[in-house]
Amino acid sequence: LEQFPTDPVTVSPLPILTLKKSPNTNILAWSSYPGLTYRVEHSYTLGQAIWVPISDTLEGNGSTLSTQDSNPARLAKLKGFYRLRVE
Image (tube, rainbow, N blue to C red; front, side, top):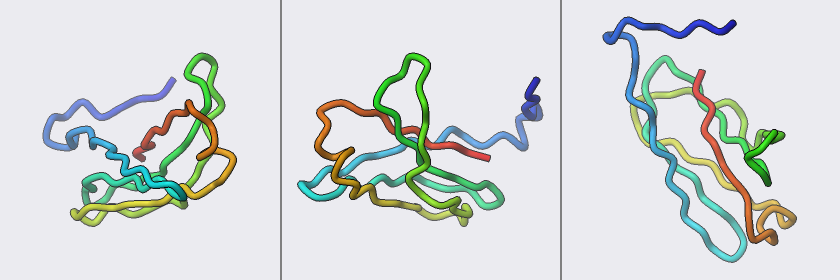
């Protein structure tokens, strides 16, 4: 059982992951918060999905963070999903 903080002072707003698509790469960006860590993951499906990390763990610093996905196999697919894991 995972437990999550319930104190509204310690809970940060959920970041919004933005995607900028180009022929050879997808650039993903989001606003970060100091003290939190982030990792972008990818899956081809949502039902019983297997999420694969596509970025290293990034430390939040209060500014916009970003990572790129330039994997040709993922870019060639017409469907896929990204999620931002916050820890």
